[in-house]
Length: 314
View 1 (cartoon, rainbow, N blue to C red):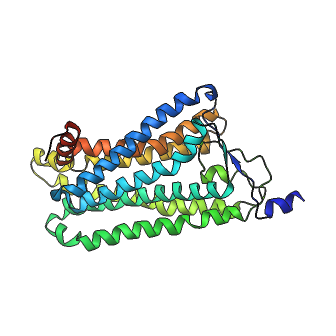
View 2: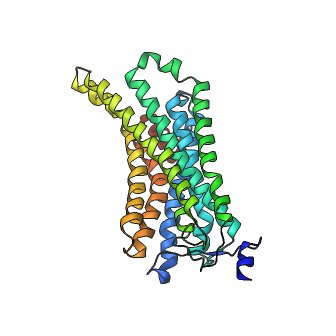
View 3: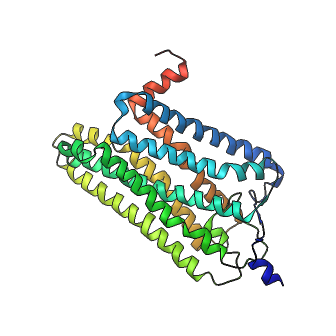
C-alpha cells in the first residue's frame, strides 16, 4: 500500500532545514542572508541599468557581463522563496513539484554561469591574442549566438533531472540538508535504484563544469603566452589588468564549487553545518561579489555608479 502511495501522483512533500545549531537564531541568520540578497539583487540590477544606459558600454565584454548579471539575479530569485519561508516564517514544508522546479532553476543557472564565464574568457582571449580581428570575430550576431548556445546547452543538460527523480519511489523521511532543493541532496532520499541519476549527474558535471574550466584554463595559457611576448613590463601589467575582473569571477565561482564537492566526497563525517555553510558560500558569494568586482575594476561602471548613488543629474 505504501509503495502504491509513493508511486501515485501524490508525491510526499520535503522538509527544508536551516543551519544546524542555530535554530533559535533563525531571524538573525535571515537578516544576514537578506542583506546578501539585497546586495546581490540591487548590485546586479544596477550593472544592467548602467550598461543599458551608457552607450560606450555596448560592447561584447559588457554584453557578456549583462548576461552574467541576469544569471546571478536568477540564482538569487531561485533560492529566495524557500530561504525566506524557512528562516523568516518557519515554514519548512515544500511540495514535491515546487522542490523539483527550484532544483531545476538552481542547477540551470549554475550550469549557465559556468558557460558564461567560458565565453567571457573567449572574449578576453580574442581581445589580447588577436586584437585586430576582435571586431569581426565578436559581432553582435556572434555574441547573441554564443549567449543562446549557453542557454540551450544548460536547459538541455538540466531538464531531465526532475523527471529522473520523479520516476523513483520516496519512502524515507524526506528531510533535506538545506533551505533549498539541490540534486545531490535529493538523490539520497529515494528507495529505488539511483544509478542512472548518479551517472547522469556525473555526466553533467564533467561535460559542463569540467570541460568549461579546462577551456578557461587553456584560454589563459594562450593569454599568458601573448602577454609574455610584449616587451614592456608596463604594457604587460596593463594588458593583464583587463583580465582581473574575469579571473576573480572564475575563482569565486569554481573555488566554492570544488569546496562543496570535496566536503561531499571526503567530509561525510564532518558536522552538518560544514556542508550547509559550503553550500551557502557556493550559492551566495558569486551573485554578491560579481557586481562589486566589476564595479571596482571598470572605470566607466564605477563612474556611472557614483553618479547614481550621489544623486547627480545627467
